[in-house]
Length: 364
Ligand SMILES: Cc1cc2nc3c(=O)[nH]c(=O)nc-3n(C[C@H](O)[C@H](O)[C@H](O)COP(=O)(O)OP(=O)(O)OC[C@H]3O[C@@H](n4cnc5c(N)ncnc54)[C@H](O)[C@@H]3O)c2cc1C
Image (cartoon, rainbow, N blue to C red; front, side, top):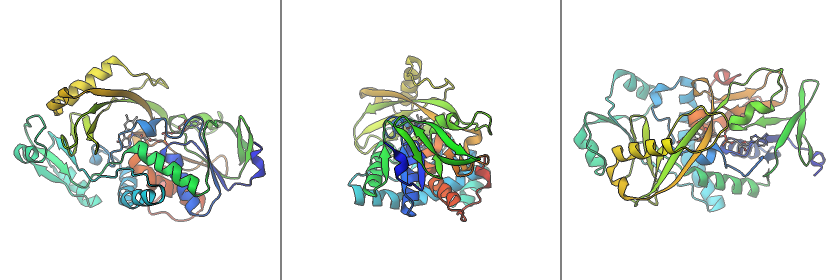
């Protein structure tokens, strides 16, 4: 490839959800975009995630996370419907609700709900049992967030990839970017194994690996891998309807009866191995929530590396030391739900225009 022959407006490095969503938003603005992915599209954190379209305990997160979450939550139904229409791939956006066991409604939660215009219902044990009869007996109160939805993130990735190709966006797999090309503190392109690609704007969306492309002497990007393990049960449709959270563990029911149980939070560097200890921990937690799961086979166990950042606030900004270089990374536990808003923000930043929210909190 002499990639330099094509004059691109922008190269997006990283073909996870953040890279694909960014490329889609840029292309919809009329930019010529290329996505370069070192392996297969969405084979890292974006595949491994659960697809819950809300932080697990949303009132524990700072305002800048809530702002991206709310924007994306509103965007998801339309975006997934458009993707279905254009690609025929259904990302299974489903408003299933989130049930949090052992939590009572207090003033902090009520304030958060009012600030973010979210519906929060407090349920006693009997009402919670009416909603989800198969759950283990509840002691105490529960909180129900009926508006919370989920997507099937691997299907969302597939739909995005197909839509991009239909939009004539170049999406290259097995194309690691080895380094950035910079001249006079301005980005001029990227170097891949197949040659150089010339462009004057680059977005880094490499998840946990994002710091590796930045100059060693430049500003440090505090993004690091945080391993999350999950297990999957082949249950039956209708056994569980809501996402359920108890004691930090959660279950996510898919339409076809699969139930995901997650997840661990581990600092193990770039190691993606699964462990027997985590498998047992997640199994036992799943059975405590939904005893009937013990009757169904555990069919898969995997790990992914979240792009961890302090407080979970992503970096969505121009890298101040190199003009034309942008970041969209560090989404930690909430990259699926913050994805569409983050793509919009980085696009606004690149096009030097106002955004739906103040961009200052997302600067490096
Ligand atoms: C167990 C688990 C559960 C989760 N559950 C949820 C959830 O329910 N809801 C939610 O919102 N979020 C969830 N997340 C978090 C979410 O998955 C991530 O925040 C999000 O997927 C990050 O996307 P990304 O595109 O930034 O990173 P990734 O998906 O990791 O993609 C980065 C890509 O960049 C590529 N890359 C790296 N270096 C280079 C290079 N030099 N050249 C080219 N390509 C490169 C990688 O190969 C990779 O494909 C979960 C994560 C895990 C692990």
